[in-house]
Image (cartoon, rainbow, N blue to C red):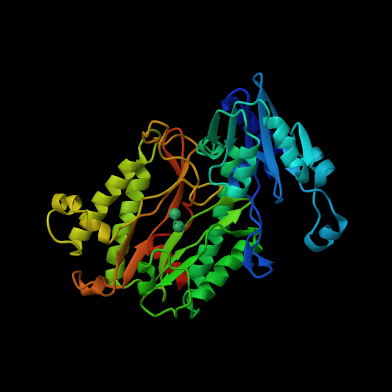
Length: 425
Ligand code: GLY
Ligand code: MN
Ligand code: MN
């Protein structure tokens, strides 16, 4: 658990960035209907969580800045015995006041009245521009004197770029659980028959170890299925001599992990699979080795495209000069995605890639990003050697940028052919 002081520090830091005579409003997530009267499990909105650590719905955080002083107010749902009997205990005003280091806690039903008073005679208003319109409408109704409206989410998301020691600890914990899950999948791949069975084994490890959820829907894609990048149906039979691309990571105490391994169904890689796999693995390792402060993500992207293009020429997947193929973007047919993304409270962490001037933000100590090159050779592509058709491979690790270079946080999750094979036997 993160200490409440850390959330307080974040609110203070944010408060400093607010203009004087302003109000910033953040809302909790709401329950989402799954079907009729059943709901998806509740998951707190990431920015709201980042600033409060509060995990209930029907809540809001309001920062009010006046004469350079910032006050923070938490609004929580009031306790109701009957409701609590159905849906569980709430902290309520008194409970929240004890747990959270805010200036005051109010009941959520008073939010509108309080907002009206807070916004009276203020100059600036901050809220998340992705907020649903019913809430924006209320905010605007009380904003008679407001001259500037700014996106509150952007300020928080920028803060989320650099991870603190306690955030890194949670990411490491998420990865440690995910390691167990991938290794279990490697051990069991030989005896299971369907993609969803592997998915179940992976998610069993997540839950068994206290990870409340997966960080995104697991992809367990055998053979040609791996060539569908967002394949999540996971309902096909595992076929002997095919590869299984497994992109799965748990979320632990709100922090994500995001790992892909590609393993054989029957413990051994075929020769063509080995050739493709070694090519992707060597690119992945070389890109990871480039990571250090001040390098740009776009440089990693460019280098990964060059190296994968080179590899594709070497294996006869692309024909022609590297320069020409890169210029024509021919490699994108088989490597169409990015080299990686920020990761944190969200698997695709909502943190900026560019600063306010539109300039790319270089890597800095404390950032966490994935590195995930891949190659996808469709079954029906007659322009590539037959032996490679129907193979899709991606290898993905989670990397922390350090003062000198990097730390591969998922280093221990096996990815060498010999290691995967010996675990699978
Ligand atoms: N699992 C989502 C991604 O790799 O970006
Ligand atoms: Mn990823
Ligand atoms: Mn992934």
